[in-house]
Length: 156
Image 1 (cartoon, one colour):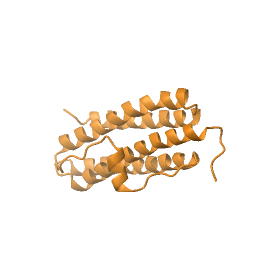
Image 2: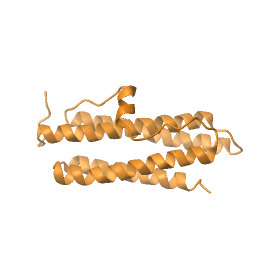
Image 3: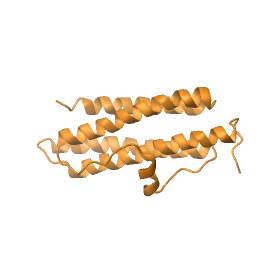
Image 4: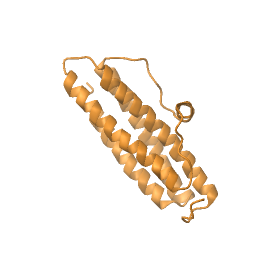
């Protein structure tokens, strides 16, 4: 049964596409963060191990929230890895145990996501008439801005 929540089906479908792209990005940055948690090497191993763990745990919650927002709109959340790779604009770099490279890679991802989400806030609010998703995206953008700030603090 389709959701009857005051959105046209056309608009709900466009919003679901936007959210599925964000979901793909979230899954990629989650996976990279978890990988860096596992594979970091350095004199501050425990600090970085715990830092990455905190970030990927928060990202796991965000992944679930994005998927649930898609379902709230009456559409299916993408769940296949091959689809995530088609939808995302994020890159998978070669594995590295180097903290500066790891942090820079993740920072680039979060900042890319912030820019994309910022654009989508106006589209969902003004063009697609969905204040709920615009508000959801605003909160999501703020989380990525904070994660980017934290990562940026580790760079020289």
